[in-house]
Image (cartoon, rainbow, N blue to C red; front, side):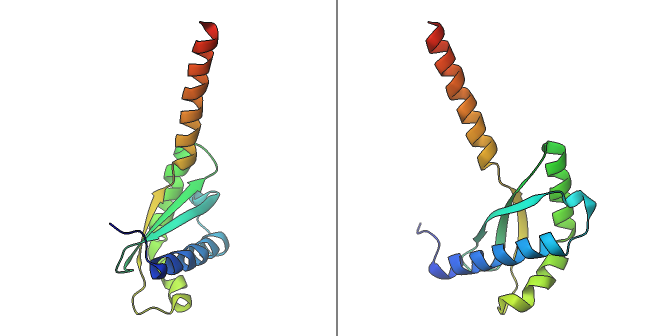
Length: 120
């Protein structure tokens, strides 16, 4: 399976930029929290945008942010539509980007292994 096409990448970058702006400036939901859009992946037909984000805070805050983003999904689509200049505005699907949490977990595991080795 080939990677993303140039068009997918361009549309993904534009969607990321626009969604970030709308979330920062126009979403007033207090449950939103401090959301950062980390990356966007477009389906090959450009009809689905998988939007990955991180949140400053714990798991509860992350869940609240995800719920707030899902509630605002149609509003965000309507806000980005004029700027995208596409026949179809992609369906937005929000996902928590757990890359940093995963990296921290790996780091902790490596530290534990190093401690065990030092103790031997």
